[in-house]
Amino acid sequence: MSRLSHLDTAFLHLETARCPMSVGAVLSFASLPGERMTFQRLRAHVAARLHRHAAFSQRLQAHAGGYCWQAVEVDINRHLRLLQVAAPWQDERLQAVVADFFAHPLDRQRPLWEALYIEPDPDVAELKGRGDDAAFVVLLKVHHAAVDGVSAEAILRALFDDRAAVEMARPVRAQPQLTTLTRLGHAATALWRRFSASPWRDLPTYMRAPQTPFADRQVSEHQQLAVALAMPRLQAIKASLPGATLNDVILAGIAGGMRAYLSERGQLPQQSLVAMTPVSRRQQAHGIGGNQVSAMLIDLATDCAEAGPRLARIHAMSRVAKAYNQALPIEKLLPLVPSQALAYGLSAWRQLGLSQHLPPLFNMIITNVPGSRQPLSLAGFPLTRMQGVAPIYDGHAMTIVVLSYVDQVSLSIATTRTAVPDPARLRQHIEQAYTELEQALADGQTPATVVAEPVLARQA
Image (cartoon, rainbow, N blue to C red; front, side):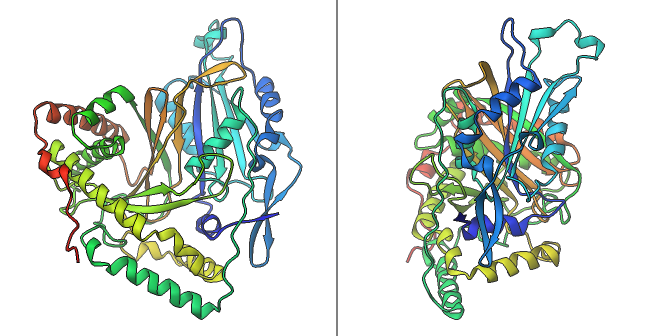
């Protein structure tokens, strides 16, 4: 048995029936000439690969005031389901299925994963005769307590063709034997140092983000939307601004789209929106489950009207935020907090509905997950598109997963109908924001001096 870390356990305490803490992927496949994928064929393929990753056969077990993973027998029929729809390749229909699938929590009495196989309905008249030309889609979700964005890729590797087995040895370092008061004292000291250190005072801080519709106080009516981008296009924008990263470009496009959408609805705050971006702390990319991430707050510069300067500002402030995060990593604070105190605190946050009475911690989560640069296949069928999915919860109904695959980048947006009543317009604004970035940089609107050497605010 391996014990869950404080961070892994936190996702269990944050979960409610309305807000499942599941992450996963939407995998779209092309057909093969003369062959057809079937539910039975997929089930046999998955069953033969369950041994390749321990997450497929481990369930939660209460242990010593916390949780651990315990190996169990797997009944694949309880984890893999079939859905026949009229047109899985139509994006709006597919995204509605994705939203519904991820809106339901996993059964904690079984290993915390589930897959949905989607194929064209053979009884739909307009699909008859398509036969082998019809594509299929697989949705896979795993509890966030078991994986983060990077370790989830190891689970996918276990399912794809020609992928080696992945062990999920999850050793948890022994906590120092300190009294509860001592550990709380250490945590308070570390927090004070993190939030008061003078070089960083102008960076965004938690619970100081502006109010937006994305702070949906009680999540309901989940919805999902996706934006597809070409990697060469993003690389061209990146190359036109010295020093910029691909992540800077992606954030700038999202920021521009959010600014335009909220402005159109008369809901754009004067203060810039703030994004929380998880940062991987893994020493190796594969071979271990659980969560090994830190958190970084990014000023999205949505109070800046022009696309070029907005990108320059995001780039400059991201460099400062990265330096801050490396100097004072928040993930080192969690082991200082007693596990029971963390559990009680998160449970109180959820049960008392504190998100309805407190300012938002941030406005959205944007997580960037690098995918395979090489084409993948499953049982011989080529993977044509991959989309990531991450959870939303009360008070924070905007999560964006950025996932790259070969020469594509997908922006997968999880939200609610209350937070985003017109998802088509948000998608259009985000797509248009990247066009505006291209034009701005072509016109030379970005001052090079902004990106050369960002100055630490009020440096001591």
